[in-house]
Length: 157
Figure (cartoon, one colour):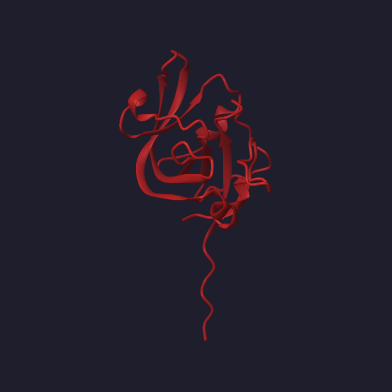
């Protein structure tokens, strides 16, 4: 009996939208297929601000904007947010990056806008996401989103 192949694993850089800090912590560049997970715990809706293909933005004043700029078209991005008003459910939206643009946000600040195509969305109890091998590393042991934290070895899809 042949064993099933293990999923392809990639490093994921975790950027948070809660503390206003976007920092890389010990993440190695994966030139083959870099993935990034964005924390949208404020549940911002980027579509009315930037248009229908926008899924995340980062203020250009943050010194680590270069980290997100390493992404290339075709890379996979995951946006993690709360599902609705409940803090017990999370929504994980997977995108294929099409482009990055520079646009003013709703307050006039220059931002890097990430644009792409939604490939799937998962909504699950936060407790289930904490236990899921694809997502568990983005949560603390108490089940809260980790902030300013790199997440490694998460299956790509």
